[in-house]
Image 1 (spheres, rainbow, N blue to C red):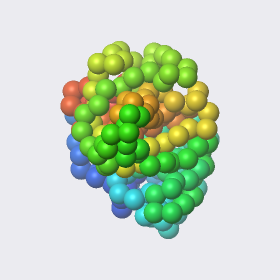
Image 2 (cartoon, rainbow, N blue to C red):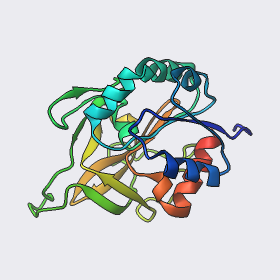
Image 3 (cartoon, rainbow, N blue to C red):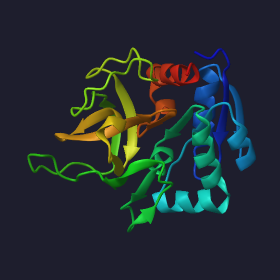
Image 4 (cartoon, helix red, strand yellow):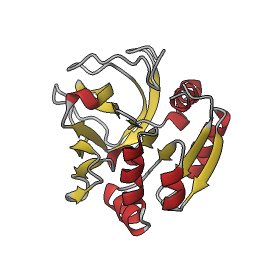
Length: 218
């Protein structure tokens, strides 16, 4: 466990930086916000937020030279957190507005949130609001030692705003799911030093702040 609270937020023009920055400051972070890929690569902990369309986000990431910086940062083994679209761009690609390539750091694809429940009932897309986190059915993965440690499965609710969700190629990468109309969709993933959430911890109240603190403890 690290005693440092240094966190670097990467601003690539597709982020709600104010909310994320305020949440990390509330969690006790020593915060830096940067648009410079060199600062991102040198970060002690890197956070990649994101809102909006996948293809637009990837265009900005590539145009600003952040694609190489993110990949190289992951290779250092230092902790990284992706949030919402910042999670999605870590994958190989997305079906949003046609197919678009991602960073390919995590195997898998971004697919549309189902517009019908398993029982065939219409359900709202985008999925907006609070939903409970559950452990992945395939692996029943433990949350000990992750930013979800001490979070209660099937009881703890976090805030989502999205129309697409990640489908990891390797079920072992799934850290937490959520249930939407009987569909178990990916809420968070973790592989080695990379953690990412589809939900917004910065909009998830005291629980979200505690998750950010636990990320900083890594």
